[in-house]
Length: 168
Length: 168
DNA sequence: TATTGTTATACTCTATAACTATA
DNA sequence: TATAGTTATAGAGTATAACAATA
Image (cartoon, each protein chain N blue to C red):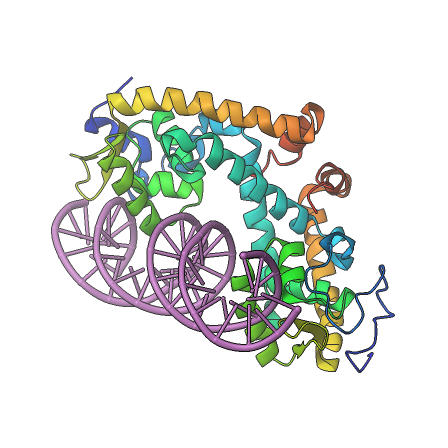
């Protein structure tokens, strides 16, 4: 519609323009997001990034990332699962789970045991060390969760969990 | 609680062998998430993945991904911004924005104009073609947003946007 | 000396395809 | 044939570091 790019936009007019000369190191806080503010996905994405960063930082001392934590938790709660079952449950590609488990197995947190019934599959278990470690991870994860609560509020966090309860 | 490999098959129960006699729900549905259900980050992550997949699919006909859409929208609403300003505003690494803009510029949606004031920086603008295209992208993005509404409910979506309004 | 855009590297994550060994 | 696990590759996305041109 508006042809030349030199023209300040008139159609989605949010706020003051930087003009056509480029605005390098200016204060970046008066930049409008326009349609993005109406998209749930944008806010959710930014929030998810914040959450993961806090999780990684809070569990930094034990070097456990969100995906690793989810794998350990599911194995801990369902010992004997196959890799396929874990991958499906968590929505992880089975090819990716291989590397995740390689790492966790090297760290002696998880062990793969070849099944007698179906020798194609591995039964996954936490090691004794893994059980102990997971207890500590859960404590740190709970601490992280309190950060989330402090960030958005106790009631809002509860509402969020309710709204997204369908996304297991 | 630690089990031997013998338990493996009772857990993941391959569909083939179950036949159609019993066990209507195959394996994956009775796997507990344990502590994960109490973590906002887990639900948020799963939701965000769902949203992005729907966005990518809904805007598949125009081959625009969420990050590309956010860049185009911000440039469209704030013509003349520098790359640094866009990167900061959207939380994208400036090194990554270079490649994103390379792609968008090749598709004639965006143009970089070297600034006269600060010859280190580029003023970013949509092309005329870019303006037209963005209008269509926004229409498709609105369609995507209706999918989100249908998925979680109108009221829940509104609550979500309110709760996460701080994550701009 | 500091900043903008750029190039490069590395690691994470997603998405496939193909291979093996079993079934 | 089909499936579980593995290997490999390609593409996004993230995080750095270094460099040239410019401030």
